[in-house]
Image (cartoon, rainbow, N blue to C red):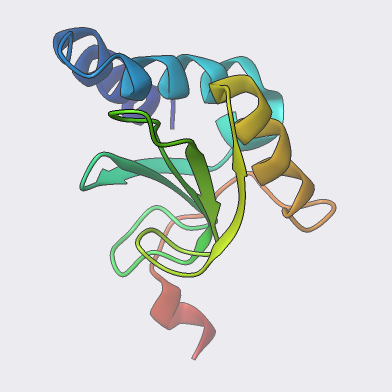
Length: 115
């Protein structure tokens, strides 16, 4: 997962026109629990999966602040909003509060392994 996080941080560094995404990636990387999950992005929203393959088993997603909108924590990227925050750090803390205790690190495979 270290490689995936490195790639995500590089993507955030290259997205200088979208500061909210970069702040979100760095805040998520600073926290141990999300860092143990597989991170991916969809439409600039970060998803955190308990497995490394697609389809992912998304545990939580966070949409970055943009054009005055708050950070949004969701059950799944582009799904039901669980809460909104003013900062990336608050969004990550809120997302972590929705993670099941003892979750992680992400395992190889896809969400279909559970079916």
